[in-house]
Length: 174
Picture 1 (cartoon, rainbow, N blue to C red):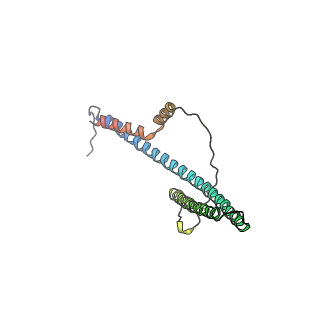
Picture 2 (cartoon, rainbow, N blue to C red):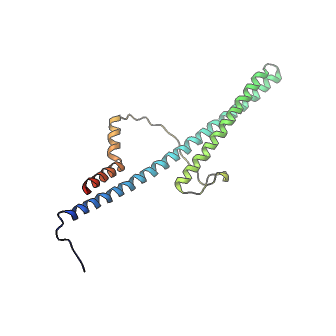
Picture 3 (tube, rainbow, N blue to C red):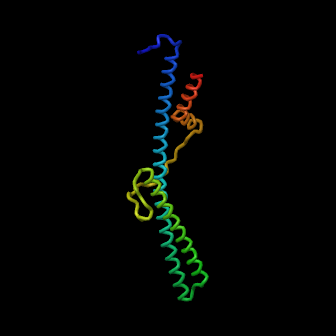
């Protein structure tokens, strides 16, 4: 036995409109999730680049301070330097070596975060990342107007449109 609604006072059309709004909301939620993943990967990528440059800077500083220690020790041996200067140079080198270890740990963690986002298996205990990240951090000055940025953000965010659709669904189903 089959039944078909002949007249429901607009309930069928309203139900279809609600279903269309719900479908649109789910598609916008999916788009928002994709945008979030893309943003997370970009941030992790730039984090790796930043930490790579930090490691390079700290390695150069350790090399420079090691040379400074040698110079101070040579001055002390010749008789023109003081023991205090040698100790100060050794302390500075030790502090910079500690900063280098911290920078390397941050680099490992940023590789781990990026590999998690890309679903590439990686264990910190392996020592070497399963991929190389190549790029240069650059700075481009741009003039942005706060009002324009806010308007663009409000117009381009799919989750806001999805929530507006959810509100319409609630209003129509009451």
